[in-house]
Length: 437
Image (cartoon, rainbow, N blue to C red; front, side):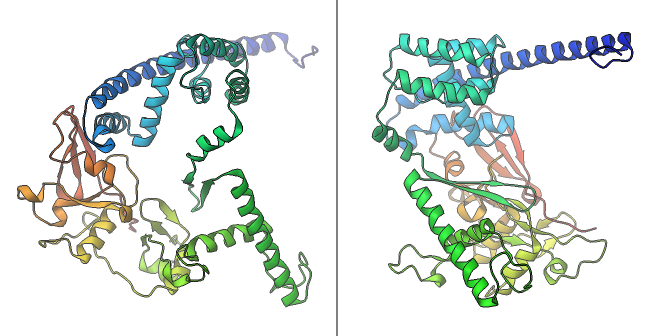
């Protein structure tokens, strides 16, 4: 056995040769992928350039001037089966990469860095009036290290270097960053989600401190009530939640029950979060057999814990019973002059979210659209109605020029056929419901 641990030197050499071949082939493919990503960036940047040029020539409000860009990104998103916001962010990122960071774009095309490296560099905030020569110097310094390390380390190095070369005072940086505050949600397959609030640092830490104090108070109150110390497992009735679990529960309680319009913040009854849940009656009643799985579905998201749904159902003041056509797994339609509340419920149950290809905005936050315009003879019937978010509803407005306007017609069973300004056809089917054989 040699010093590397091989009992058969010839076999060991063969294994090394094969591993070397695999590494070389893998590195070559990664370089090819980087080159293709650079070409994709050029295409997106060119398309965005054309849309921006057209937008700059339009008159009217900002919403009207955004139509060329929104229509263009909507078509790219539909073609790639990606969310439009993702494609829009990619388009602006590509535009910045190609037009302002040519060295980084070339390094990507040459396979010296990955698309992850390029994105981290492109996302570094640089002053819009920074001289090209200084930006080029910044690129060169960043790329010297980027080709030798990970994208994450490149991010830290690039941002530190940018602050050094293009110093911005903290108050100015904070005011700019504060404009990006918001709330985002990421859903997981286990019925859980991450809720992220981007806030000024002071407010974020103050919020965490508050829920921590409240959580500790709950823990102490539970321990005092049951005559046991926190963490003592001798009492089965005590609150067994961890501090993190209690903090999460308290934060959810505050978000869902406090009315910000009241001074004393005690009007619990005033807040009613709008969600739509579908649960088979056997799951609701807890009657699933050994060969059945209890399930429930949050419309527009996916499967959630049926036990939690049963708890919510026990507090519901009323129920909407919906009938599903078992032959096609679609909601039965009806016909009225205006959408009645019954029709709205049917449409919410069928659509669950915006019906533009790839859009997942929940139906309760969307508008009901006549696929064939009512002013042009389209009936107010379930077979001619669907939910669209405001942004995608605007894209089919009849007043838009043909080069930007999308059109849609509803086929049988709620299937939509979208026709893009380029004449391409995209099919959007209603989300499938949970069905038991």
